[in-house]
Image 1: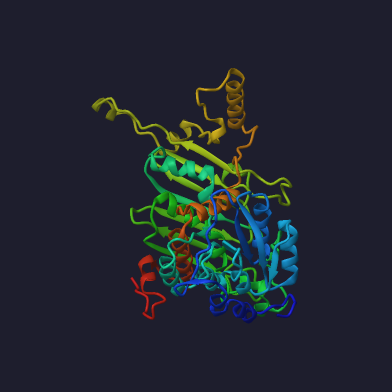
Image 2: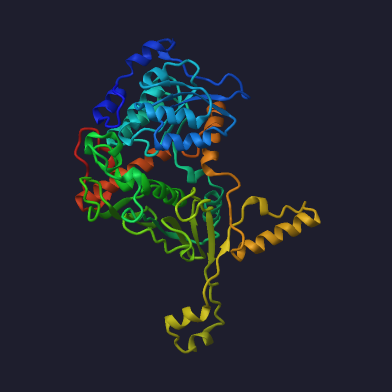
Length: 477
């Protein structure tokens, strides 16, 4: 394959071709590829990276410090990406430009699929058929027919781990909030609002900027519908997964509005989207993503871009993940989880209470005073009862400083590291990942149907996916 930066979609599709070359090269048992098993519980999982571009390199920055896995191979269709991947991982992996050659390696137990969205499924399919465990970045699939095909294929390979990259599921803060929801601490949780806003005018992202060659240049894959799900796939996917997790189900239907108003450089994905998801018990997620402003009206305006608000009758959580170094904060920002309690229920003293004079709603709200957030603490600040005097006093001091905003909350371990370590562990123990096949497929379905709702300007029901991609017309409400 030619080594240039203007690789076409056809080049990538060619690389994501049939599995015949793999099947011919891998040892088989009764005609089927052998499942790559880690030899002993204390051995490292040997893995290959398929796609060492921006996302693959990002994961390798984390993978190089994770002890229960070892990179033995890297594949990309561009030589400069391969070189950068080798430099990032810091050891001496084998390198390929055809991922089928990587899959043919007997020593590879697992693979990371970190390629453009439109080839997630064919490569994941080939990897499963080659007997490998698979970590595939979100979205797990791109088209409706791939939803059904991957579910059927995974059922044929039940002993292989398949995980998708939804790292919020591995965050201590998000797990704590999920427990608060399930235990009723927030009361009846009926509403979630989420946003991911960026200012691509003042602070352009190289990943979303049009490059020479237009749709023929694979580097532009995020901004063309033929290869991408746009903002919905790249951003909404993370946050609708949070909503599904907190509500405990997939939505019943979605409706929304998307348009291309500002970034008119030849792209055909929307540059702003607004979505409403309705869940079976009447819960709702409202969502916004724009490309011309990064303001986030959470956390007293102290953070930008993305976050979620989870609202119940007894309290509200504002939450967001941490981010890496950026223009505004060279060291990056920590995760935040703030809990706001609702006013306590009014206690009546009988019929005499009914004779109280009417008080206007605005007066009642203002008389209560502003709510103060309670930072959710990491487990290292939990009081176990076993602390010595100095340890106990240090914990009290850190708790107090955190409530005053002097100390920042921090994840004890980056959720990206946790999800990667967990993947390797699940390759060994066979346990189901937190972000497993069905979580990944539900997330992909939400993206597919959300884009359909905006394209067709209608309410799209989630049960429509049952017939989509099967050669039948989708059911319309």
